[in-house]
Length: 233
Image (tube, rainbow, N blue to C red):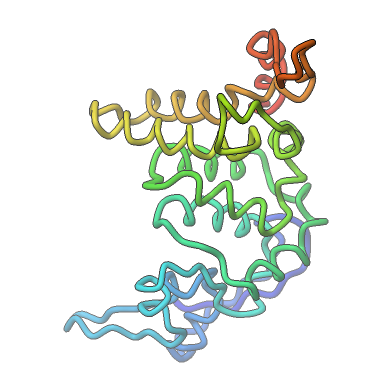
């Protein structure tokens, strides 16, 4: 049944809910998070797309449906997941909306946060798109183990792709290809993708310049173990 939600508190349960069977299709769809999630289909196969969801999917664009998006910060992490899952890039207006509610990160409950990261790891066709979303929206700052690697340079001869952050985006995409190639799914894929995500988080504390002028990161694998535990917690 279509419903009207009024924000009255913190978190996903902080709403007054009133069911309204007289609500129009468009009003009901307006409360959905993203335009492609606001589409409806009737029993005859007719599609109701009031907010351009089909065009956004064709253009690989993630766009919020309305200002109601800001009522639930969990939707930002859902956006991260969808960017990876559907190979999308976030539009400027939605990125700004996400930035405007960044201060409400602590409202997201742990189980919801894990659900979106797990889906990102398990369902993405291009995981790096989800990481790019975190950077564009500024939400990367809520994950310091990831933010710190955005500022670490690597030896150009060994890593022409650039920073540890750029390297990590390549690695998660490559791991996804390997999992798909080898039929690795479920928890096993989640573990491998998250391992790829966190494999170099020890580099910020270990990167230095060698006597020969090269950028090196001795012991970064061991240094990243505790940081990986912190991120997963």
